[in-house]
Image 1 (cartoon, helix red, strand yellow):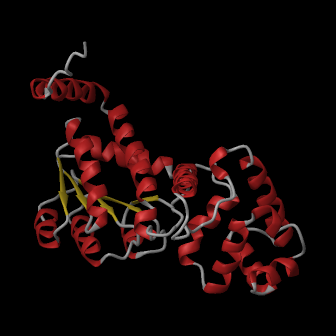
Image 2: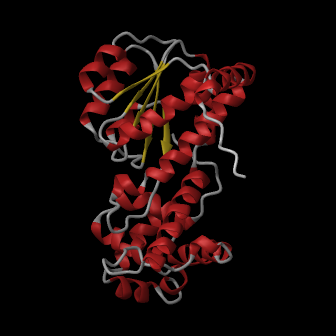
Length: 297
């Protein structure tokens, strides 16, 4: 149902699968991600022992990835890790940050995990879904964006961008306001939800209401097996790596913003003349509110 762009490698797919894997498969996957080449350098038994799981868990993980068996996994991991060896942000960094780590190490780790999250998300992004959603947004009578708590920030970010290029857009973080607004939508409208977990009850209620009115629906989420993903017509998946002080939702922020950027640009391309006109007019409107830089003698 939700296919990626076709450029996502096996390591990217593993990172996307992590949140929904049972413990034994997740531990095996994390062991591979922490040391891709070393993890598959031996036999299936070697991997199982190193990950403290079982050969059965390794085989089940292979099946979840759509691979015929461990030999196919070894080849896929070797090819993917080899293609990434020259990428400066793909260095072997700790997946956590020690409380006493110097800021130089913190910066290096954050650079790597955030760049990796953006890369992996865009590599697997469902581009046909982005295009279809951009068309719906570009021609919609009204566009609603739902998101609560931290996701409300990302919802607001998208709405600010769309409003700037002439898209009639509203954001809702309060479920009562959101439901009242969603009840007034129709099949000429579009509604998009932002939820890292895909299980947020308030966000689900708002998108469900929009769906019942016939609006085009979409979700930006890290969970492709979730109530929101099951409900939405278009699913734009994100991924992120957790570090100290950055749990799942916080770790996904840069990836979510990357998806928002792509969607915004896609809408702008499809409504080019209107977009250029609105960007020029809005820029002119705020010109008088920008102070000139002082001249330095």
